[in-house]
Length: 389
Image 1 (tube, rainbow, N blue to C red):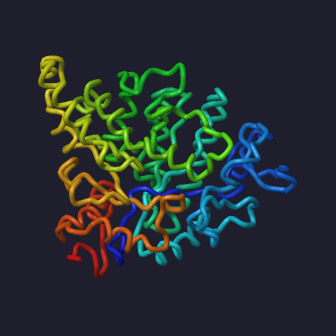
Image 2 (image 1 turned 45 degrees about the horizontal axis):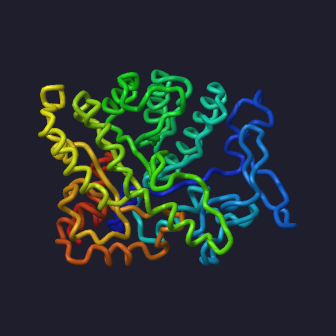
Image 3 (image 1 turned 135 degrees about the vertical axis):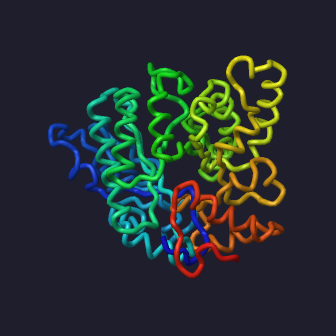
């Protein structure tokens, strides 16, 4: 991949075109195939996605979560009809222009949503394969796209492992997106039941990525807060901030369940949860490991050493200099979050420079692109490839 800007986003998002599933899923699903439909909201005709034939909720974040790409950047502003959606949200060719405008070389792409809530394993499998195929087509447009595979939870661990292998080998995905909370009644993520998933990810050298809250309740939980005088801005801020505790909730299970010991070459990434929340997790895990003599129960490696060996975290508006010692400069990556609300598009470079004040040049290169290039197995070329900032 040609490196021009020295900036790689380890967390961005791609939307699906409105015909992504109608053109790829089996016709046997009929109206259950995800699609964009027209509904009424506050006396206006708006577009919304429908899944599994359910009536869509007309309120919410419009027909596409892409406020950073909208001309009107006032918060919150989401497109209400499909013709308002900027092509850079769902079209890989148009997205390249947005990356150049923002000065970003490449981006790790999360995509969604999940459909396991409908308790239909066959439908979920067909949906996941269609989603992974659609995102695989982005990699055919440009090697600047690094999509993360979705998984068919309801089909079981072996089927999940097979789909990961297909998505990586056949579709060009560079990692896997998992929730930390598995759908009921499936086993806990730390259960050896999921070992086939960890094994294929380790074998293919693709990292497992957790995003935001990773499907876990945080703070006062996911219950929607609405009352007179409580603005969408207040609600959004209260909803997203608790994601900082995600690493502290998940890392202990990865370590103390023995996953990281059984799969020492498997990497995990925590996106959109920042760096600062790791401090307590490291201190507590090391304390518990020492106090409970957990090396006698198969946890041979000190937890902080395990984190340094296998676990990565992302940042975007935290001041990086005082936080580098928490996870180690080799384990932190910059993220854009394009095209979601926290994104600084089209001034990501300026935002990154602001939070990297005081960081040595060699460390800046690692944070801005070298760590991501190493983890997601990129071969960098071009005049900027491997050269100092």
